Image 1 (cartoon, protein in one colour):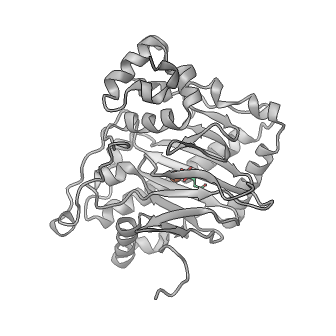
Image 2 (cartoon, protein in one colour; image 1 turned 135 degrees about the vertical axis):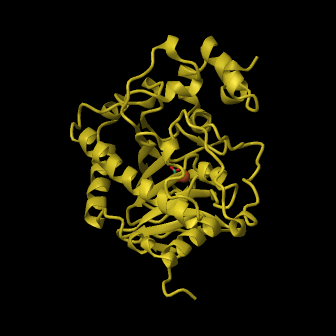
Length: 351
Ligand SMILES: O=C(O)CCC(=O)C(=O)O
Ligand SMILES: [Fe+2]
């Protein structure tokens, strides 16, 4: 029995200066692939303030939210109302606002790879000017936390703590979501079972549970712990560790009976142009690295841009249809996604 009743390990950021703390981190990341992080520097009050701001956004009128609808963004940024996201081939019951690194889009003639179309500006609602500066600040804070955790994870694997830094470039690729799960008549897919594509994900939860993690044959509830961030390993880290660290399936069940759930998810990945290396693990860990999981329906790609784009094209088919179905892009997609014909992404292209 652990000294706590938590369903997942609890890791203190300040414990990671000791070998014992690093061993706990290694165990959590390789056995479960999910853990609670505490003492990370972002107070519970600050987290509640961000969640309150998120609530304010979702309470804007639908016209105000539609003004930043993701359908306007070839870069998969902005608002999605309920029913505009698919996971595991089914519709999710959540509304969300996505933002990523604030960037300038490339001109069409500069596009060499389809994933370069992910690069571009965010969409910000005129009705809520406070949103942009506040969320960009949050993005920087969460980015710093994930880079620290990534370096500690490298250290815990017995490789140089900076071993993956070159793939991050000047700043990692980050993608974040404000999420609202409205109550449903009966339990439904808030977001269906999936793995996250990047290196690491942080999740900030309000007081409602609903997040579930796959453990063997069971789904374990990740009850919110005030102040703790939920951390999970993404596909790129499973690849970099040759399967030693686990990207674990997880899902959210929508709340019922008048309750709504708010969360903020933050995904950190390498630069889109990077290729993820396989780390040279010490022999005692290498024997336990059995290779990344193989699923023909979800190949894990070491070229980061394609791994990220794969997820976006599948999650938001309406954006894919509008922005990724012109001839030059389809040609590039066919070349880049030999395993996944564009007809599978976009029904309209089926002949
Ligand atoms: O809302 C949550 O708790 C988790 C969401 C999630 O897993 C995702 O958006 O990838
Ligand atoms: Fe996720």
